[in-house]
Length: 173
Image (cartoon, rainbow, N blue to C red):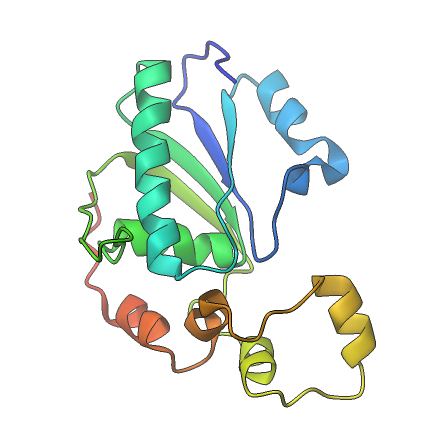
């Protein structure tokens, strides 16, 4: 997706259980492209540590910058995608070898939509198997749940990731 635009590329980052078509519910990518934004969609595995996804976002930003010729990107992130994005900006991203990645000051603007920066009680219920009466509806809504998936632990209230994210010192550029 390499639309020529005078503005910085716009990356859409999905939330938990996102997959191809996540942003298509009201034709969002095409509408934004029609407004002149070069829209890209970033997808990451939902069952890995959020800091791994933050690292993958950094790699994707590098690729998008190389394809667009721009030095910065803009991001719209939904739910867990906001944690992935903020994890990258806060320098919390690590690769599969546990090597830390460094934020390259390459995001101009970030918009987050419903991101649980202090954790999600729903994730706590999933990992501690403390479901309430609406289990079937929630499972239907979220899809198959793997309570052992690291992303649920990272999303939970009081997790190491949410604690580190809360305590990360962010310096506005």
